[in-house]
Length: 587
Image (cartoon, rainbow, N blue to C red; front, side, top):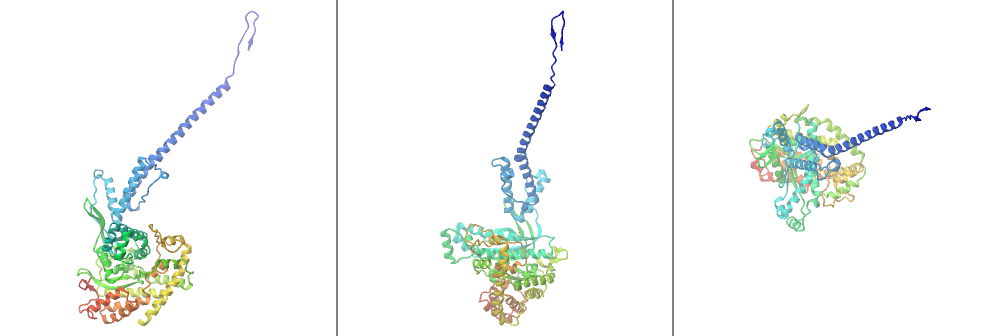
């Protein structure tokens, strides 16, 4: 505004509007504050992410790992963690967790399944009683468990050790690698490695049903059968020694091949730690474990690779029982009851690489074989009740197993007759299921043996292609044949055992060929011979065994042994014969 006065000097007042400037300044301050806030927020978030990634999460994983070890030491997957898991090499958290992983892995390997409870108990006690954290209580009372026990022994180990010297460790560990990998995949666990021998276990939970128990027993036998096959097939991997060691071995044993003897039994045992605070072994103590070792040692006497106890045989499914045969009954001491000995026949002279090629290039399955398999399944369902002698209607009764069949092989004076009837019933069920007719005389054995075996192998080779085309990569890895059908790599083979199905005994060409020396007609004739032997009619048994021995081209071990026993007693059963052999008879 301007004001004019004639009498005074001129002057004026000027007014400026700063509204826009204040507004701009305010907005600038506001945005600056927001920017600084966001910058601090992002910086804080980034910093906490690094802390969370490098410190907090690793510590949480360490705590969780220790808790998992505490609850189930064998169920933890011990693996080396990398940057993807938040562990950078050189950091303290990485070092700590790596150390825990290594210690946990060593505990799992050293203690095994039998020591899992010991580890878990000590970890729990240290949490519940802080004053005892620095103390270990490894030698507490054991735990009563039920299990299938398997015992394996390497043949000619003493002489092999002398030949291989320091390389014997490679030899044993390669055998253990194959054996343990198969047993683990067949629901078992490795327990003790005793130089040339291995103790394997298949623990029986109280909640197992009858069918589940049979499946577990089937898998135990399958593990040993597969181990025998793979130990023969992987000869190049196992016997990859220095030139000098190989020369010494072949000079002592020309054409050396790895052979093992196996025993399978089922019963109770005490699981726990054995030793002192300076050295302990987690293992099992029981007469049943000792009996398993006895079975393995008796394989040499009977000339077989696998021996099964009667309680274990009764736990098998009907389909697998039909593939085994009773070869003797023994009584080891006055305190024990007689028990039947069974075997699953094995022929380890098979050319497995050639068989792998035949399996790979087999023809499609014949419809009659598929129909036979369906009949077999229906018959199996009709007769499945026979397995329930070891179980109640709700599942496995451990008390019944302990009292009736497992702990001391309780049997009556006529037990051997019922065992024979049970075995013959299972064999008859199998024969009726696959369409085989009984024979009337020994003169038919040779023809039926060849025709049945040829037909069975031909149809199984046909079936193998159908399975092979659908799962060719898995089967290739399992057989180790690659693209040529022959495994030539000296690296550790990858052996994969598919999920168990009872049809594997009739569809796996390797298992069928493993028992190729024994046909169904052979088993029926053998059943009559062993029945006559146990009943004391040794003259009749001798006639049958001699005919069977000729048909086996003088290769059947049980036949040879029993003929020798009969001959040693003048072809007559002893006057005090009660249907079983005793310690005085060589057991």
